Structures are given as structure tokens and as C-alpha cells.
Image (spheres, protein in one colour):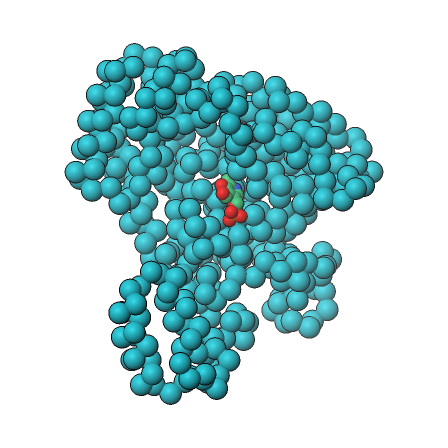
Length: 422
Ligand SMILES: Cc1ncc(COP(=O)(O)O)c(C=O)c1O
């Protein structure tokens, strides 16, 4: 191929097309069509602020409209969304942030990166953070609550926001696994002060790597935006002086690229279909699978609002759960893994970064930070007995939006028959 006299052109575009596993024949046809056009001299404006047709900006706009929130910031991962939200909320040294013992470790890591310390509490049988455990963990140093809508299941946002209001705490919803899920008809991530979404490859909608921060007020959005862009501070005016204390500070670079923005924009159009279809399949399986004695469906905080890609159930005793998971007839979960000591970053008893207070630098900051000296973590692998019990008794059925009618019927039959054999 002849090199083109533009920085970004057909060669780059063809590599992107290749990511989608388009056949070589189709690629050749696309290239042939592209060759008929002169190179676009202004192609590939990958910097969102200088691009009038920015996909990232359009994605933010459409995401905000969809969720009904005033401010949306696209970032490069769910983890960076959480960190930007922590910074925007003013979380820092000397602060405690409450977080559940069952979540992907990123929810906790974000707190430590913000130089605060995580106060890790139990979940309840809804598989989400226990509001009672939150209340018990509040101290004068508590700054925020991170509630996590695990496996697409909503937290009880009415109770959590009421507790936060009573104690003047920020609520950061880790909605990484639950984009488009709802609690009492309102989107997850829009109940708290911040809603953080992950768009990594395995999430409800995805763009490779990406994330979203939803904010309620302009100042928080400005702080999240500054942190996400090396403090380039694109406030209404880039080079204006600080309008309000706390607006200007040094930051990182979490910018979403235009390529991710383009994929995210297309994915956003599929969000309703994905969630509606999963939910329909979730309900269908729940109604058609006959649970034997000793097993029950998990009572979620809102069955109408689940994302529906994972259908959880609870066994009365762990031995039964282990037998079922060993038989492999369509019910997964961690009961079996737990008996075999299989490590998993979703449960607090495996987080030795926290148990052993491991830090990136030798001085042990933030665990040893003088501001944090009054916060005693002292966690051990046995610090969360209730969460351990629940995880050890739980099972899950994978659902997904792409199941055909035939596959659903086979799944139901396999599970109903499987239960008769164990
Ligand atoms: C609950 C939870 N929070 C945060 C994250 C981090 O998202 P990302 O992988 O986009 O950084 C994940 C990703 O798996 C997650 O499951």
C-alpha cells in the first residue's frame, strides 16, 4: 500500500476494521472503496477538545440524556471513574470510605489511590452492601459510602441515600457492573452524588477500555474533569484563574480516546435492548426452573431493575452448593472455589493489599500517612463472616441477551434434570 500524505488515514482505519474480525475479502472491498476517495487531510482528530465532531463529547451528551443526569464525563476505565469521583468528592488523607467486602477490588483500590482508607463491611442476602453494616461503620472520619451494584443487582438506594443524608456523607455508586440497571425505576448511578460505570470488554456495554462518571453538580464535575485531564482545567475557560477554591489542582490523564468514544456511542444504542432482553430471560428462567428444597432465589432489592445477566440463588448449606457446582449442569458460583481456596479479587479475604497494607512506595503511604494514624484497619481473612457465609452458599446462572429460545429451553431442562441428580 502506498503511504498516504496524512497523519491518520486508510491504513489506520483498516487496522480498526480488522479488530472487528471482518473477513479479508470484505476488508479488500472496503479498502477499494476508500481508495476511490482522496485522503481526508483532517482525519483522526483524536483530541476531544479540538474536534467539532468528537465522538467522546457526543457519547457524553447522549449518555447524560439517557440517564437523566446533568453532567457526564467519559474516562478511560471504570477504575479511573471511581478515582476521579473520589477526588471530586474531596476524599483524601484522614478520611474513611465505607465499601462492601464483595466487589471487584478496584472499588477499594480507588479509595487507597485517593489516599483515604477503606472501611470494608459485610453484604447482606441481596448480595449488595448491608445498610445496617454501613450505619454501624460510620465514624466522625467517614467521608463517603461506595455502594456496588454487583452482578447487575441494585443496592437499596433509598436506605443508603437516607443514611448518607443523615450523616452528611457522599455516595459514590460503583455501577461498573450495572449500566442501565434501575432501583425503583431510577437508573443506578443516578441516586448518589456520583455514578461510575465501566465500559471494559466484559461489561453490559463496552468499548474495550472505558468508563463514565455521572455527577450531580457543576463544581464536582469540574473537579472530576480536572483530575481526569492532567489539570488542563477545561472549565468554561481553559486559562481562566480559579473561580472557586478547590477548582485548580494537579491531576492525571484519564481521557477517553475518540476510538473508544465511537464504539461506546454505538454500544449505548444497544443498552436498552441488552438489558430488556436479559431481564426477560432472567425472569423466564426464574419462573421455569423448579428449585428443590434447600435452594431459594436471591431476593434482590428490585427484581424489575436488575440488569439480568446473572441469576443468583442461595443454598441452605454449603455442601449442597458445592455438590451442585461440581456437577456442572449450569449453576456456577464460588462455593466450590471457596472450599478449594481458589483466589478471587472479588472477595475481601483475598485482598492482601489491604490485609497486609501493601503500598506502592516503601514508606507505606497512605496506610502510614500521619493523617490516617487514627484509623486502625486490622483486617484478617475472618473479618467478614457474613459475606463469607453468603458467598459460600450462593450460586449463579449465567443469562445473557443472545440466548436463543432453543438455548433457553435446553438450559431450563438441563438445570431441572441436574437438580434431580445431586
Ligand atoms: C465492581 C467493579 N468496579 C470497578 C471495576 C473497574 O472497571 P475497569 O475494569 O473498567 O477499570 C470493575 C471491573 O471489573 C468492577 O467490576
